[in-house]
Structures are given as C-alpha cells and as structure tokens.
Length: 57
Image 1 (cartoon, rainbow, N blue to C red):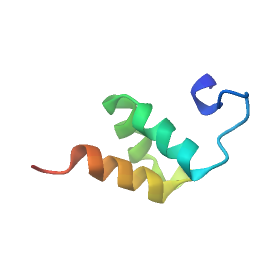
Image 2 (image 1 turned 30 degrees about the vertical axis):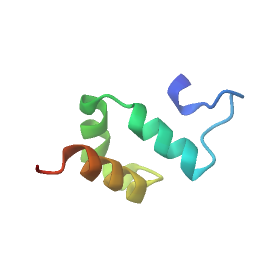
Image 3 (image 1 turned 30 degrees about the horizontal axis):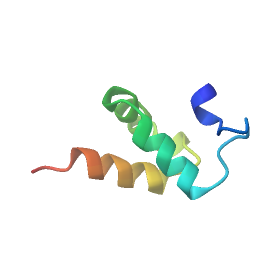
Image 4 (image 1 turned 135 degrees about the vertical axis):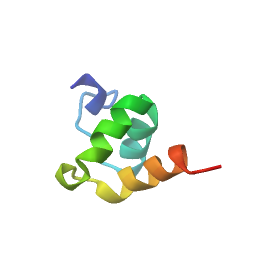
C-alpha cells in the first residue's frame, strides 16, 4: 500500500504519479495488474506501460 502513496502520504492523484508508480513495478507485478486491467482506475496508463515494457523487439 505504501507504493500507492506519494512522498506527502497522499494517494496517487496525478497522471505523472501514476506513470511513476507503474514504471516502478517489477515485471511480475505489472503483468499481474495487467491481467486485471478492467479493475484498475487507470487502464489506459497501465496498457501504455505494459506495451512499452513488453513490446516485441
């Protein structure tokens, strides 16, 4: 739960905070979150981070 808090102890509020949070997740955690994308409050940002990290090379 601490990962969802910014340095002031506030929940993620801005797009930049959410992007930073998603980029800080381990691959395993990101994949697990992506499997439940319909339950997240930020599905578009999650999909962008997933594609950025796991796109075919």
